Length: 449
Ligand SMILES: Cc1ncc(COP(=O)(O)O)c(C=O)c1O
Image 1 (spheres, rainbow, N blue to C red):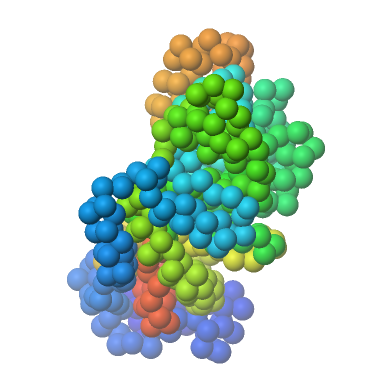
Image 2 (tube, rainbow, N blue to C red):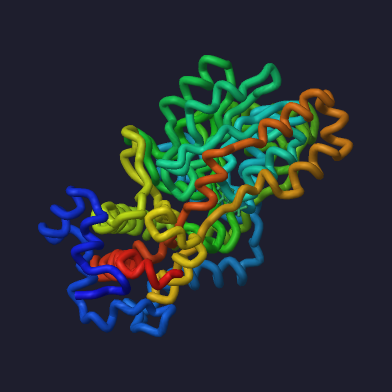
């Protein structure tokens, strides 16, 4: 049977022996089992593997309406006059096994609050992953601290623990690991490095709800953990965030700071306002929606993990497709995204953009993910700002510019392919469609030219 310029046998000959065995045992997608006509890629006018849309997001039920309307009618819309934010904070802390939780307006402000509460700010350096949503850069820069990037481990898409220590200077105060895509970073190594160098750890778990490292929930391992409940997230509220932690005094400071610096437990009433603060309070409406959403988080997380594992088993032997790996300490992922790498060398050099377009045309939404944002203007604008020129020696800023050389991350930004979390909420048939579409594009790679 001919597919493009490649017979099924030739296609398999390019795969590993293991892959051939996997096909024989039925573990690989057998796209070629379909009619030879469907070997024509959908971008070339062939029939798409899938036309059915995936699960839409967010999913919501009517149970939230009663509470939201009751709050509206009561006029008690802010946390000072209601119980919902307190209820949601308790429920989220309990779900994570964290001692305390303080909700905020969004994930960005949770991170800013955590940095402030741990006294990380002007003139400090924070080790951070370059492979992240821009908010992680923004909060460090916004605190007039230098975001010092440690290169990425392309196998896991996470900060490479082997690249952290070489970036530590006398100004380094914190490590800000991001559990990006909902995959846990290597917390054993990060915590050990932090301990050795006396650094604080703030986990950016904004994509990591209910992910686990050695049975501990992400966000509860470092000094503080930060979450986002934005619309696309697994616990969606529209906007919303949380800081979690186990140290009472620290969490008192978080609470006080997020509420205008008012006294709170150990933040003693020396005056009306004992510490500097801001207003990052969550509203009662947000908490009511959060309480309705929290109920589905555990079940959804289980489903995403089961489907991700199954999908990996189906695509792992397709030549040129490299699924993500997990560190040994990972006991559960959140899977905000499902990533793999695309090796164009095994696709006749076809650029990733062509592969993404072909996969999309087969009915599988996907994207190439983050770019090398450290090359964007924001970094240089910050370095030249009066805040930074006054807070860091010129020599340090010049050296920093040289450290923006991150070859592994550069390469990952060229090779990554993301599938979205809502696609992992379907059944096996949905995963088969994804795997079959990837296999179809791989088998017909000549058509990408
Ligand atoms: C890794 C990461 N950090 C921080 C944030 C910021 O969260 P928010 O959008 O709620 O401000 C996000 C949100 O997408 C994120 O993905």
